[in-house]
Image 1 (cartoon, rainbow, N blue to C red):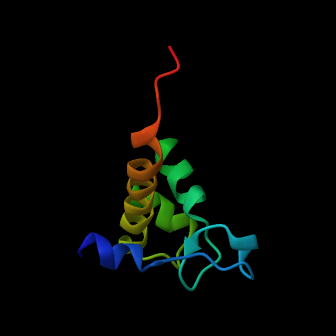
Image 2: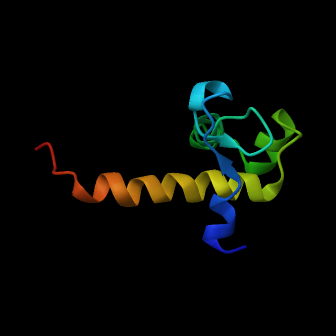
Image 3: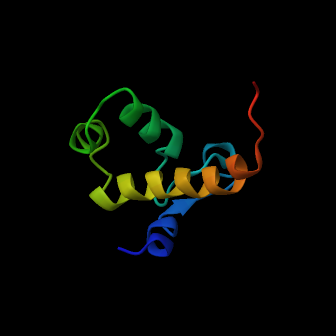
Length: 80
């Protein structure tokens, strides 16, 4: 699935989870998925915790994080 299609799976709606980016049609924040992956859970384990998620939703969370890093971090200066 192309990156643009993955990003369409992310919703930011002020009426859902206070506007925190979530997987479209759920109340699962992207940050929760990313935190779980960072802690070492596999995508299948994340889906075990959130059965409403599809494999593409995990990829969408990663694509969203990459998009943010590309736009925010690229202009950052090292702190040292």
